[in-house]
Amino acid sequence: MHKQETAAPTLSRGFIVILAALVAFGPLSIDMYLPALPLIAQDLQASNRVVELSITFYLFGFSLGMFFYGPLSDRFGRRKLLLLGIAIYCLATIGCVLVQEGVALSLWRLLQALGGASASVLARAIVRDRTGTNDSARILSWMHIITMIATLIAPILGSVLADFFGWRAVFVALFLFSFVVLLVSAWKIPETLPPEQRLASATHLLSSYVSVLKNRRAIGYIGCMSMSFAGMFVYITASPFVYIEYFGVSSQQYALLFALNIFAIMIFTFLNTQQVKKNDPQQMITFGAVAILVAAAAMFLIDQVLAIPFVFVIVGLFIYVGNTGPISANCIAKLMGLFPRKQAGTAAGLAVALQFGMGALLSFLVSRSPSITPTAMLGYILFAALLSFFFMWLSRDRG
Image (cartoon, rainbow, N blue to C red; front, top):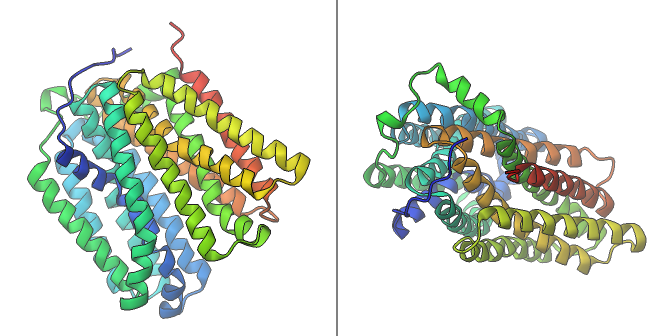
């Protein structure tokens, strides 16, 4: 097994902001255009289901792209693939601006996702190239905080753009964002994986994936972050129905409660940046997995006994959703620390792809429930928390 490295950090604050912008491609590309979906359906004369399919296409393309960019970057380097992927994203976004019917929008979104996946994977691999495990956890946490700020602002910005300038303005804004990031990346991001540290040949790409999947601790880290993230996707999918239809909150109150959980991620992730300076990220993974399991179990059991009061849902989900940020940052830092730098792209790509894939799967399952009640939502969240705890246990060093 590869020994974890403790190289001193070499990333400036400005460089971290650039990497955070790269990681933000995923959430920005989804959250900014969600408020515009009804307008898109009306303008393109498409059904809501056809337009909503563009979300599924994006998630599928994003996950698929990560599987390829990670190992390819371990073979050919980070910089060229990063710039190529962002360029594809820019071109596909222009296609979204000009599209005239619903199915075409989904296809352009698929291509957009295949390009944008490079930014999300390779930003994390670049952190691993330049830092040791503990510093990676701290820097990834800061990147996550910046990404959450973008996630918080994105729906508001998308709503304003769509209301005042039409839904196509949302994709114009995404194009401008991606084009600026492309220029800044070309200017500021060097190649961080020298030729002598890369995989020897294309035949090593498959074996690189195999070596990650054969590693018990790697499976533990990937599973822990993926299942905690999947529980959050259950919340995102089910909470509008549970909050508004079951508990009777207004759409404005729902927006505030949703923002509260984004702040929870920012708060817990900030605390994580302080803790990993003195504690091994493994300790923080254990704390996070225990916290989300306790929160999920408490909410579910209270619901079974009392028909859960709304305040318990708010507090429980604050704890659960808040801890997904530190769990993700610490798991991916420890995961990449298990392998040499020439496999960092493979490890990061596999982890983030499965994270989004499991999130999409549980989101799909809860959306197909006969009725979306607090019991259904909390049951799926508890299921995700139990699996996350199991994978945390699997990730622990037996030596």
